[in-house]
Length: 146
Image 1 (cartoon, rainbow, N blue to C red):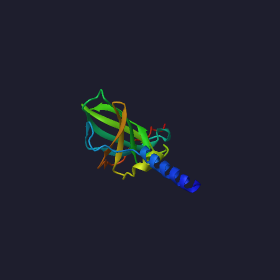
Image 2: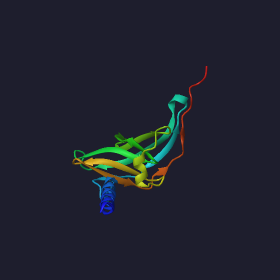
Image 3: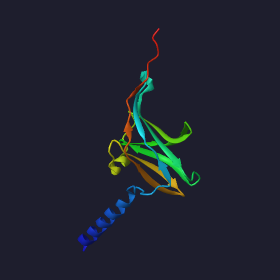
Image 4: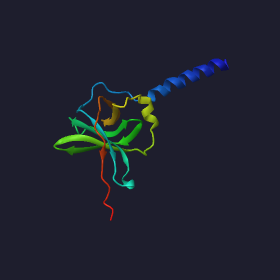
């Protein structure tokens, strides 16, 4: 009897743990443009290096939607929506020394894919971005030596 009860509890535990996985939305309330990523290297040691990701978005109902985070290449970063050249854009900078996120391993993303988390009417949802184009690295020059 204990064996059957133990098996039942184990199965219930497995089924409830699956609900914590992120469910990607097939229809999203905003449009996503062609995203680009670009490696950057600072001219000074303290400037650091990493990847900048730019995702153009057209938020249709900005009052109901709040962009939260971006999951990209094993890392999770807070997303900021800025206006660049009269276009709304999610821009994130991911330093090379930022830690890996265990949440991104559940998503099983390719190097040209990202996931945007957003809050819509109090409910957390996730949208996938495909075909992120990799641009040439941006290398900043260092300060002149006197």
